Image (cartoon, rainbow, N blue to C red; front, side, top):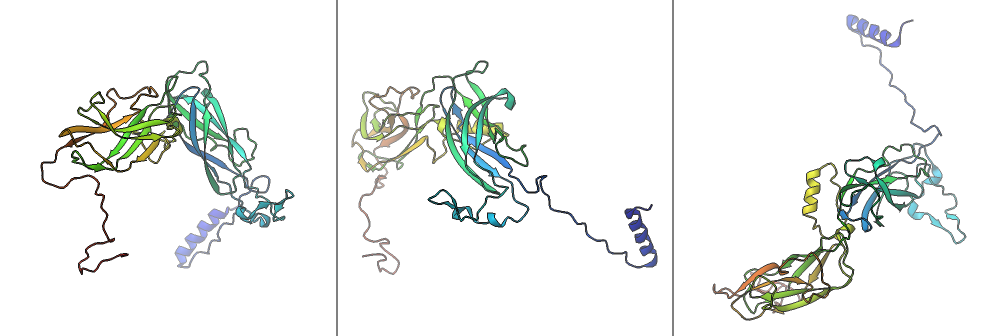
Length: 375
């Protein structure tokens, strides 16, 4: 019996000898892929981000991106209504009544959170939390955030060091999927600090004009960050201080003071991008973890305030909790941060502080002399 391929080859050789075209080859016909049940199923995939720092018994915030890669390969007329138009009526029935979910939709499920020592597999970790995941239609994605509380240190686990967070979608297999191999996220790096975790407040921004002179008027722009694993839950005062030395001492005076109400979240509440495959990138994130806007950074826009008129040379900086009401740990030794030099202006230039007299028009002196704007 002559195979079809050898018959085609024989026809092609005969065509080359006679100069005739070989018979046209018919295209292959392939059926669309179905599951063994006759319809398509959901396919959940999960990734996410984790806060870079936490401690045993403390909070840890993770951000989850859950995607349903499933898509129906057959027409489902009763499932074509957009989910935004589907409602539950007063009697508890679905409106419109003919609507039915697609077989490729993923019902509500859970995402399990595992904490794994660096270098171990998922089996060597411990489940530390469960996050409720919403209903996810086919070919759709949802992003949500949750804060879990880590347990006290289990036996056999180090008190501190490098760990990874692994997210497992549909861990209890309550949703029937076509593929379970992508239900585990890449490792999300987190550093566990020794307990008890403490806040660590730092001034990261002190924006004032350069070349300040005594008596200038400033409107300070200040940002305070909590670089500790624990949040600060009480109010804290932040002061702009003038001092004869670059330290906060008896010769210092408070120029203005502000109150941050409600405290400041810690790094355990700030999910950072995953750099699991780039160790150098993760170390850079640990060193440079001031990413704004973030929940561990608080911004203060101060009102206009005049600087002291004497002496001819002094220093201006930020002091957190100047009256030591909270007895905060991990504060700088001299406590005067982001120091600016204030000195008498001997250049003959105008002051660099805030100019408090506004112009009369939006554009005062255009080339033709006619004022522009609202008079």
